Every structure is written in structure tokens, then in C-alpha cells.
Amino acid sequence: MLKYKYIKAQLAKTNKKNDENYVITRIWNRLDNIDIKFITQQYIVREDGKYALTDMFFPQLNLHIEIDEGYHQSPEQAQNDLIREQDIISITGHEIKRIDVTKDLITVHEQIDEVVHYIHSKVEEMGSDFIPWEVEKEISPETYIKKGEIHLKDNVAFRTCADAANVFGHSYKGFQRGGTTHPYHEETMIWFPKLFPNGEWDNSISADGKVIREKNAHEHKVDDHIHEVIHHQKHRRIVFAKVKGPLGHIMYKFKGEFELDTQMSMEERCLIWRRISETVKTFPPIKKA
Image (cartoon, rainbow, N blue to C red; front, side, top):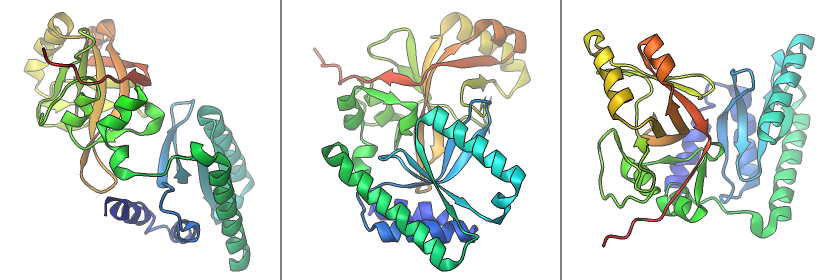
């Protein structure tokens, strides 16, 4: 049932884009394989700090599908598309297939069939290396404890703070606070922020995901908060930001490991956290004595 809801939510993201919706829906239906996961409007940060959204992404295959509508035909846009495509390939190492929807319907269908055939052949070539898509395993702490690490490129998100904390050695049944200690690394905190203005806090994350700005929304509390964190709290944080998941519910998405830039924090009167790693190690639960 979770998989069905996920698929409907991904297709719904293209509802207002007729060409995109038609092609993506046809690809998915022609594949007829629910072991293959797809993502629509996949977010990718480019080298210049800007971001790109690819139309359809198959994470198990590292394959993106781009749908070229009429405006892509101009020489200027074609050049921009080429640069964008080269950026994506350079950053991710992924492959991109393009479908030109300015052609007649039969030709569009032929292009779609070629992509579908290519995907089937990729799955077949991978053999036992192809891991079937299982939604429950994808959001289970045990999956990442066994894997031994979490990487930013894996788009890891957990349903609860407790699940996120438990991949580092905790055994929480329930947990609602904004952060907790790391059982294996005393200098590190596991943090669950809202990276947008909300009540007491005015937080944000840069477009490239490398810098988090944390500030108390009340001017008279700003300096006290900065002083408290700099002098009395841990300066490393593994971040799981509170976001809306693909099914519309709240999830906690991995953003990387960050370290406090104390100098810039004091200069800007705002806590500046800089990403120092896209990968963190995971740990089994600590055994109680």
C-alpha cells in the first residue's frame, strides 16, 4: 500500500505538465515492474551552487530521463541543456536519456519504448546487484545499520526522529526533542531542525546544501543563543531536517554532517554551520550493561 501511495504521489507531481505527465506515466506503465523505483523532479545541486530538476530518475540504475518540449529546440536553450547535462553527469556520474516530445506521437512512443527496453536490459545486466525496491526497508534504521553508512546521494529520510537517532546506536521507542547526543562520538550531536522560519527560530539552508544558518527569531535572544552554543554545546552536528515526504507526511531527511564556523557566527550574529561530510557511519544499538 505504501508503494502504491508513493507511485501516485510521484505521478501527481507532473499533473500540471502535460507532456511530462504523459511520457512519465507511459514509461512507468510500460515498464510494468514494481521492483523499480522512480522519482519525478529529482533535485540535483550543480557545481556553481545552482540546482537542476530532472524529469524522471531511477536511483537503482543511476539513470535520468529528460523530456524535451518545444522551448528546448532553440539554439540558446539547446546549449543551456547541454551544459546542464554535462554538469549533472560530472557531479553524479549518472546517465541521461532524452525524449523529444515535439515529434509525432508514433515517434514519441518509439523513443519511450527504446527507454523502456534500455531499462529492462540494465536491470537484467545487473543481475544479483540489482536490489528490488522495498519501501519499508528504504526507511528502516536496520537497513542503514547493516549498510554501515548513510550517504547524501541516497536521499535517506526517516519517518521519526527516533528512527534517525537509532541508526547511530540509540534504542529509542519514541523521541520528540530537537536533538540528541551521538552514543559513539561525544563531540557530535544529532540534530532535527526545521530549516525554514518557524516560531522561535529563523533557520535556512543554502541552495547547494552546504551551509545552514541558525538564528533565534527574537532579537533580544540572538546573542545569548550564539554564546550558549559556541561555549557550551557541541560544534559538530549530523543533520536530519524536518521535511514533507513524498506521501505528504513529515519525515527527517539526511543533510550531511556539519561543523560550526565560530568566527563567521560571531561576525554575522547568526550560527553558521558548514557541511564537512556527505557521508556518516552508522552503528548498532549500544548494549546495556
